Length: 275
Ligand SMILES: NC(=O)c1ccc[n+]([C@@H]2O[C@H](COP(=O)([O-])OP(=O)(O)OC[C@H]3O[C@@H](n4cnc5c(N)ncnc54)[C@H](O)[C@@H]3O)[C@@H](O)[C@H]2O)c1
Image 1 (cartoon, protein in one colour):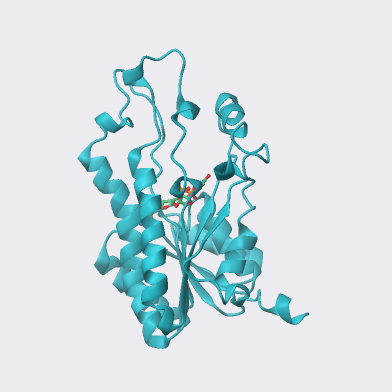
Image 2 (image 1 turned 30 degrees about the horizontal axis):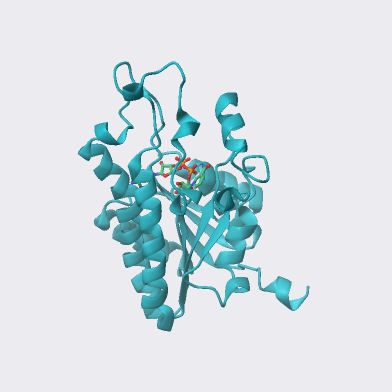
């Protein structure tokens, strides 16, 4: 193999992936496994061990699935030390978990509208998407800093650089108070991750920890035709992303191939944010 291709290898490197049992979390874990690494899936979803077991079988690696609430500092510390006991090292943290409350309208009002958004829901969304990334980076990043080695990758969104286009969610038959919208927290969490990425990339630059983010566009998962038609018109490549189209970028940003990259945000959105 040529030298530059060898740099894509994640042979024996251990990667913790938060929200590892979710739609994209599984893809990230598979990408790590494909490159020879050991994915450790963290999720509040009880099925996380089953998901990890499937990855172990499919990719012939010893993947781990662990139940962790990333909004809870004690839970993170406890489970992180279990990871170290079991696999003995940590190389990569992928902060992937986030709430993405479904944009639906209730009978009388739309709960997702800014004027109706409850403090309770705001706190829950910030707790997972932003506080969770902060706590995991603090616990795991500090350990990496002591070892003078590590990669942190924050999974952001095209909505870290553009505002949601609320016309995508508009239902012609509904009056304004009932119109569903993309919640404010999604934008705030994703813009916040940009700040966390930039902050940590300089904070730990002298500890050999690289910190980057990726901003994916929406993945096609059988959304209603009307929505797909509208969003497609906003994307120069004329389609939503396929589920596996972020895997190569994950390997790139987690491996030595990106050794001179830190503090960056890799935008993979079919060109949506250019228009
Ligand atoms: N799916 C997309 O089209 C898309 C597009 C752009 C960005 N993203 C981003 O990618 C990431 C993953 O998205 P997804 O579509 O896989 O979402 P998902 O909802 O399928 O997965 C999120 C996972 O996080 C877990 N989780 C929630 N709260 C947690 C907590 N407190 N502790 C531990 N785990 C918790 C959930 O159980 C779930 O398995 C998110 O950050 C999302 O914003 C997704």
